[in-house]
Length: 110
Length: 113
Image (tube, each protein chain N blue to C red):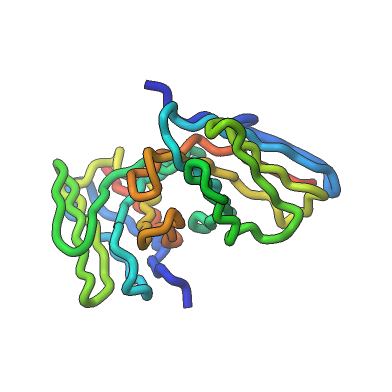
């Protein structure tokens, strides 16, 4: 079993839709949670960074962490074609090793 | 300011040759990480450096892989006797410390023929 599981998709939605991206993890020691966006042939770009459980909002993006169920989510409101990319969840404990999910490919159609 | 830079951006090499990949982290960042991303896969941790501490090499897939970080700044990832399965994008990241946000470079696309 992978330490972080993420459905690779692809996920296709119409412009303006609310997108929900999810990951599960197995190690209860994980306490730092991140979402990265990666465009084709580019390096990952940090979108959201949260510590422990709870919600964090930044513009159209909301990250949620539920440590009791080991479940992390990213919501994108009013999705735009420019949001089309691969979204990677990542987590770590107190060490420097960041564990990534496989990534979900999102396509937002105009 | 300047982000993480990596060179070369693309590298094609023959099986059995050695390659060196370079990473220039963001100035002032004490932590530096190397990851590998194969086609359609997530990022696979290879190694990280934190200040003057011994690096965590637990992700290196074989003894053909090694990395060093000189003067606490630039890092070089070396792959000896390359194999076709080494073909991937090699990504470098840096952060202020190991708990802080990591910023990635654009990667080096390695193709072993």
